[in-house]
Length: 517
Image 1 (cartoon, rainbow, N blue to C red):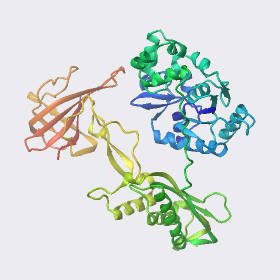
Image 2 (cartoon, rainbow, N blue to C red):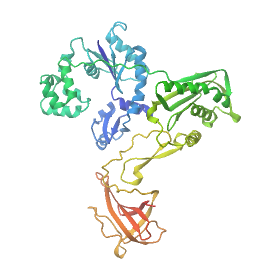
Image 3 (cartoon, rainbow, N blue to C red):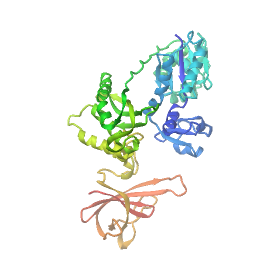
Image 4 (spheres, rainbow, N blue to C red):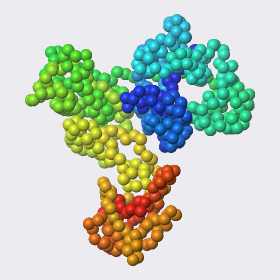
């Protein structure tokens, strides 16, 4: 069985730019922990490379578009590509976002190259302009052939020619494999330049020195180790719609008429062991091809049939939808309502906890307010990593899963030890801290205190009070590579009244940042 690999280069960057609605020619990169994970051709032309620190990448390309890594976003953006290929050739094996494999089309499409050209035309039709194809006797060779094909072109490795083709490739072809970057670096230091050099080594030596992944490549280069192609079953159609004949012009009547469709939608998901946490609700007016009202709704747990009916009712009544008039009458009659699951997860993920969860009435009330004011109007705090208390919290829209958060685990040099402050001020207060003789307390370049604090006041209008106890400093030097670095030191100060404060010395100026109420 011949195998075709379809490769869409730089897919994490393509997905990130598509989500932001930006053109694909802009230089862009996807970062994880401030390290470049993927970059597009525009960024590479400016000198940006994978594994580069964010600071170095932006110094080489100041106009670089910076995006956080998001595997869910990449998978969502790749789903239309899988669906487009499945329309022409069932039996697709998705390997990862940006790469898929299938049985090579041959006779029915007029040959392997003709089949690849047909698929390229189909992918261009769904907006994927940079797609490359490789055909060989097995998967690894087909992937390497696709990576060496031109844009919207196919590289065919003739039957029986996989081993000579692989032996001529540089060892850098293994960089995308798990642990491949370290293995390639070691191979180059040992004088191995091509996969043919690797194939000449003993199998036990390769396994012991480079690990199982490179050992499998060693077997493939030797003409063995091919793995069967694991194809996927196309996902079932989970969207549901209902047509109204004659069209309905009242929001209450429409909401009542979609109850059975909402039940069918939820039941269809349940048969697959799924629940929906993000749904697209569309209402189409009579005589129109596109929906007149389309809104994305999120749920902190999952949607029930009653939740779907409520969201539709609010959507029709909302002023932003432009459909509803006074008294619930819709200006233009609606002839179709459609529910489409955007995010469906296994029902076990959202099983009830031992002590229950958020009251359903609270969730419905919050969702109603969110529908009236907008998705970003209702937020919840989420903990993330950071040095300052203000940096450790971020706000996420209600019902949305947080992404791109900084890790909460160590190390965070300069961060204050627990317990955390109870109240973090929205805007720090100007403060003063003095020592013996009214001398202002400061922190020198080595992080030492110039004199012990004796008196302080937390705000300009407050009175002075003696220091009962203090701890610190916890110094942080930020932007140290700039000509004017920022030096910050934090102190825990307790007054004689027993109240504790988190106070910050910032380049010679004192602020009150938080309180331990």
